[in-house]
Length: 345
Image (cartoon, rainbow, N blue to C red; front, side, top):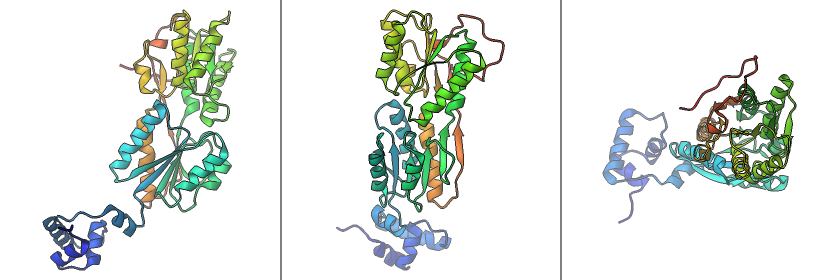
């Protein structure tokens, strides 16, 4: 037996097909008694709207495009988890793509989304903003996630990376550390640059010499940094890595090399990926609440898809989470006050 159609519902309810369509698509210009009659007829017949036909009538695809710099690692899995939860409650599916460091694949990834999605979330802190904005369709709702500039008319959600790095560096100084090294992220990444800037600002404000080590956000660069530290006679007493992956890589290599953490050297990260709570010792970090960030991006984009106006730059403030890799105070804290802290229970 064939499934009931919209025409069957119209015949059962003794109304027009157009009236049934308005009820199914949630239009507001439907009288309550009409809506009740159509819904009763649909229930009696066991009618289920066809998603493809419904989206076509609404001029929608039912999909949201998500363009990320990478799809590997805990940060991105947490981000997508938050996005997927928020999208599914709004009956949207996610269409994922990633943009690599080269401009041409990034442009191609954006072009493939055209006509396939109702809106885009774009996270590309490593892509030149002018190139990025030139490829964004003017008619398509777009939310930018950490794209590194205010000179545009798109909605944006951004982590306050500078403030987070300031809070972490102040915390390390407050616990008595003075020889603080920073393991930076890629130079072409706007998030990495802001985290480095926050670290350097605080070090100079306390008349301390910044020591920046090159990294790439990968765990292996944390391992390499630790090997450099182990081979140095005048070792730093703290290592602030620009993300948790590098911090964990450094932590494992430093302990393997015979240094006590945090006794000989404190190690801290940024992002608060789930693994930071599971390694031993657990990692002090700046918590971004990654899944909530992804959910918020989808929430704002859906509001734009529904016709809302949004060109705001919204800042997400990281929270300092103190764990075992930097929980003690080996020396007196400086007299100037530190930024607000939240100790994890």
